Image 1 (cartoon, rainbow, N blue to C red):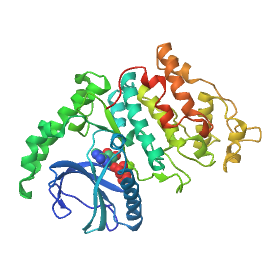
Image 2: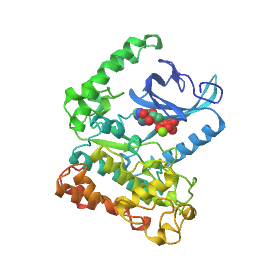
Image 3: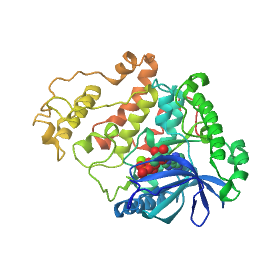
Image 4: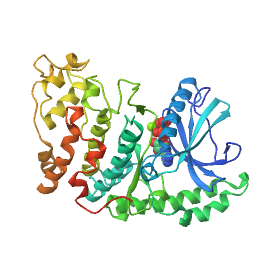
Length: 404
Ligand code: ADP
Ligand code: MG
């Protein structure tokens, strides 16, 4: 993919935007871009530099993402804290073409890594509550203040932040002066030094957050970053607005990553903000148990879609006939009675029982957590609570863990 129209090859020390940003190391990549840790020489801070592939369709996608990000950067400062901030954007010309670049605030590990570091056993419920609150404040902000549907909410797309004052961060104050030297001095040695320190701190932080012993974390794979998760008070932000849309003009018909996809999307019955609430419930379950809520598979004689609908019904009860038959694709899956055509026998296993039987939740916890999740998993999208309503739910406020 490092060819005309593709990724831009970056070397450590490369300069961008007339020397303002200096590349440090790769943070990650997606199908559209590579993302780099960069030092912003103007503000003396670290930023994430997202460098898009250069072909026309990727430029289009980046322009769309920039439009959404610019719009959400404009809002009440208290809520803005729960969505990623676009700092800057510019064009960069390289051997493979002209690349749109987005400068984003530098964040830490994703919730997916947090789940991984719990050895897929789930996080303590107090942690789950804190994270849920952050996501909900972010969603409420997107939905109500900007009319934006995220459409791809999943653990990968929620990144942790530190509440530590960056100016007092010892790693940064040690490294920053070295980085500010001329380009020639930014060599592999410096990068290794940063890497080592970041890894050590990241292990400690993840151990703290995931409720596991530091020593257990050390035996696992080290997280790729970051000093930024070294906060006790967990905070996180919603990221990746590449697929987001304004509710008033939805773009794609097939949205959301499979496991987090709402039933109305599968049925092609139209969608709105409530698709994000469905995905949110799937994330909350995954944080608490370490398992995805739904993992549909293709089977003999049935599709992944049909299995997905069957799994939903086994957990949540039958989809009301009116809803089941109302989508453009309903006829592919349901007969006129509202029964699945190819999966006839369902094994009902309600959420409450699942939490107790499989995940060994104490009865009270299981009951309270199901009461929180089930309304979000209503087959009727308009009946799902909004993010604002969900924030009022007693389950979230049963402990004092308000994110600041
Ligand atoms: P794409 O649109 O190409 O899928 P993403 O925005 O999903 O790109 O970013 C790719 C990866 O880069 C992410 O999965 C994450 O690991 C990393 N990343 C993205 N943004 C940040 C950020 N602000 N801070 C730290 N890492 C980031
Ligand atoms: Mg992505």
